Length: 181
Image (cartoon, rainbow, N blue to C red; front, top):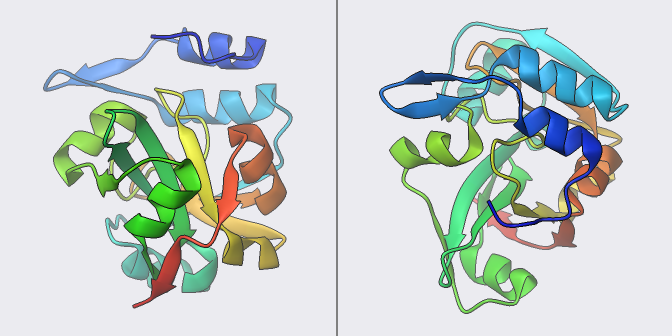
């Protein structure tokens, strides 16, 4: 992995033991919790029935879909993996994301490959603490909320985080990268 100016907590987090199924290295929920605690990030886990799609997760957990993020592993035209974080009730605008990242284009990584990059299953991908550190873009509309919800490391858990922590821990770009569905 290239040098990405990792913090000591990042290096400790990335060196934790992980487990593999079908050749995919997965991060454990325990690793995610440890990462949050080591970085002093306020958080709250919410247990729910297993879901994959954002709208289903919001419904079963009883949270506002606009406050539940889609954490979309994507790839730029130069092969750089990036994380696009948008509200659950909106669709990502890939052209706007490319502009925010100052690249020619961005496309979503196929659902079945996203886990090998983030370390978490689709439907459980958190907004922070990924297996591979990636540049992130947070949709500006999320800044209206003090806290947001995201995948909690598995498909049966959500994670509530302070929005400003999501931006700060990821050194995220904040831009208008979503549109109504």
